[in-house]
Image 1 (tube, rainbow, N blue to C red):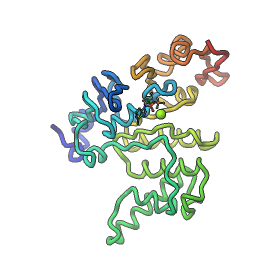
Image 2 (tube, rainbow, N blue to C red; image 1 turned 180 degrees about the vertical axis):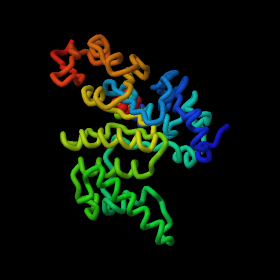
Image 3 (tube, helix red, strand yellow; image 1 turned 120 degrees about the vertical axis):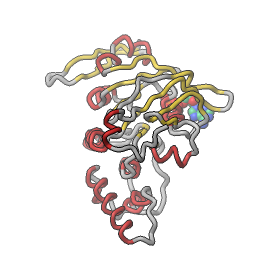
Length: 273
Ligand SMILES: Nc1ncnc2c1ncn2[C@@H]1O[C@H](COP(=O)(O)OP(=O)(O)O)[C@@H](O)[C@H]1O
Ligand SMILES: [Mg+2]
């Protein structure tokens, strides 16, 4: 077993710790949802989008990977088996941002994001460093003007951005995002996808993100996983995974997949099947 935290840059270059998911099964009491699921290994710096219809099991899969649900099979980061580790150890490598918007609590945005770093309040230097990190993330997401606002006075979209900032500031090795842009306007949808991609590349994170907008997923992901009924229906580059056949099978829609005038991949849905 290799300790990820203590591996040197040289040997991590030699074997960059990919996230490997094999034969994963998970679900709820008497209700299997994810059944024997395996994915292509996810490499550092990669953004992989998980798409699929309502109730396909996307959130269940993310929760299982994060260790928040009982699961069998294997979730490895490099050589380290993550599944079954105590939650605190698991949480050091993997963070999960749920689909639900954060609770309406009477903390400021800045306090909430700093809180995610769990620094001791005794150490002034640590507190200053945490504050600087939190402010940096808020600036990247374009919400530093909200730093002193209370969470319970924000709009849904602003709370969603705060929740994302809270996750990003921890710089996890593996970032699991469940519909992070569902409440955001056009500007912030684009901004979040752009920043997540850049941060993933900079910090060598592995990002698995649930999205509903297929054109956004195609534009910002290295790879797409299409999930239906708890199983992988298609996996590959956006061009490989998002095809009219797959969309018809999975969403029961008649769709076209085309290049727009600037060459971006776009999905147009014409009818229900
Ligand atoms: N806490 C739970 N207890 C029992 N069943 C659940 C629970 N959460 C989700 N499910 C069921 O698991 C299936 C997959 O749900 P989910 O993973 O949330 O789907 P998705 O995120 O793809 O919309 C659904 O049929 C849902 O009803
Ligand atoms: Mg979900």
